Image 1 (tube, rainbow, N blue to C red):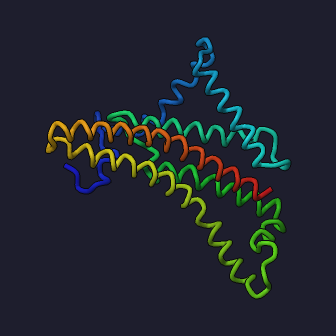
Image 2: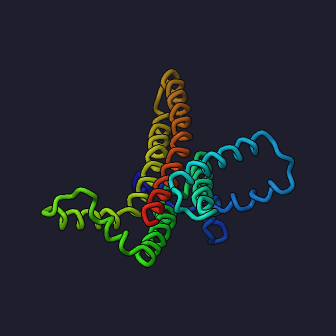
Image 3: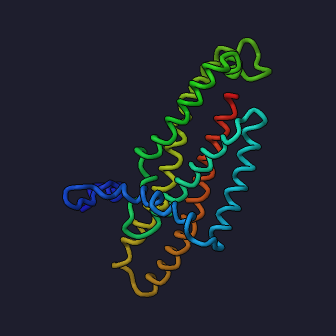
Length: 225
């Protein structure tokens, strides 16, 4: 029995006293080697084109100061998040990206590494970044405080944005589905149409939120170079 609306998203599947909910996040590692022994198909060509497009865009965002191969970490981040988002759309599969445990574990180390790299190697640039160009002298102390707070909340906003968007759609689908037994046949048919439309919307959100997370991480990386 649910104690609250969000308890349905908690890891609670226990087999042999072991929680297997987070295993869905590991399934991607099991299917990755298929590219080395399965003949290329239309899906693999489509995915390759998507990755090439992302590589070009991330390379543009990083600018000329970006290191060779630095886009691969963001492409891998996008691939991992979009896989977990889509896994959550299947019935009876735990949505790992709806938990701050996973989203904050992705955002915090990235942000921390960017900050350490920037302050160690580009200290003057990081100090200059605290005061936007053209700021009046009287507003400089306030801008330093605002920019500092803005930098510190970045990993939290990244994590909360992804988790909140993923949990909102699943929560709406669950609430609508729970009203089905008390409806008439006509309303049930209408509910099915609405559920399918929401599922399509959730598929778009799964891709968009993965893209937003990766792009913002790329922009945060480009600021320290």
